[in-house]
Image 1 (cartoon, helix red, strand yellow):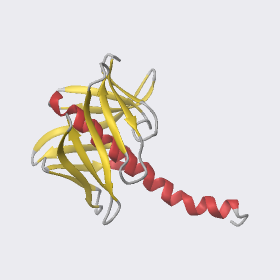
Image 2 (spheres, rainbow, N blue to C red; image 1 turned 135 degrees about the vertical axis):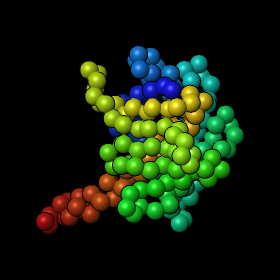
Image 3 (cartoon, rainbow, N blue to C red; image 1 turned 90 degrees about the horizontal axis):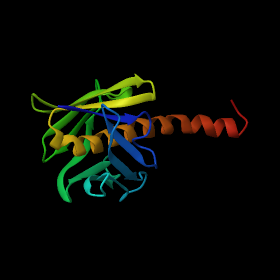
Image 4 (cartoon, helix red, strand yellow; image 1 turned 135 degrees about the horizontal axis):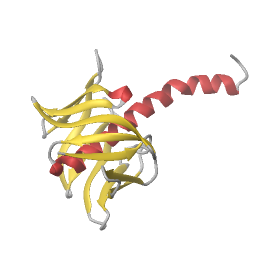
Length: 173
């Protein structure tokens, strides 16, 4: 079981994201972009080897993402429902993502078996997402899933804020 640390609010941004271990050693680099069909994020080891990626494939009937590990498709992630809380499912892997997505406190499970838990931590160097992954071989896919959760969370907030920004710029309250 290993812990992976990612700087708060860096996962879903159009930027390079470094994933570190508990000692602060850099392990992975995530690059890419979101926003339109076909966009993707790729996860690389620091030696340049791509280990996983996630590609946005659909806006029809909800946004879906294909997950790849070592260039092989391992699953499709989609939101199933959001009552009473968000619930996401990764076909082919039979993994479910559920919990408090809004506060980055959720888990990934394969039936009753825990795959990963997400939480937040404040360290001397700032605020971080902490991914507690049971099997290190699942870490690249878990990091990609966490990036999608982050994207959905902050994309949802932007949509809610958008009408208010329009009203303020037009001079109405």
